[in-house]
Length: 130
Image (cartoon, rainbow, N blue to C red):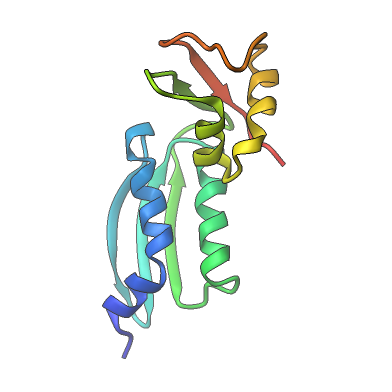
C-alpha cells in the first residue's frame, strides 16, 4: 500500500511550486492517494507556470510513475505579472523560469528600454521561453 506522507515528501517540490504560484492565480485543490499513486489536483494560470511545475515534476522523478496529476491551465500562453516594490526582473525570471539570467528575454518581450528600471505597477507579459 502506498504511503501518503512518503509520496507527499517525495513530491514536496511540486506541491511547493504550485503553492508559490497561488498569488498569481494557481490553485491546489487536492493532495491525496489515488490507488498507489499520489494524486495532485489543481490549476495554473498560464502555460508559463505549467512548464515550471512540469520542470519540478521531471526533476523529482522523470517517469513520475507514482504520480497522478490533474493540473489544468486556466489561462493562455503568457503570464501577466504586475511589478511591486522590491521586484526585479531577475527575481521574476528565477521564479517563473528557474533561471535568473533569462531577464533580458523578459525585457525584450515587453519592449523595456531599461530592464533595471521598470516602474512599480507596470504589468508585464511573461512569454513561454525555451
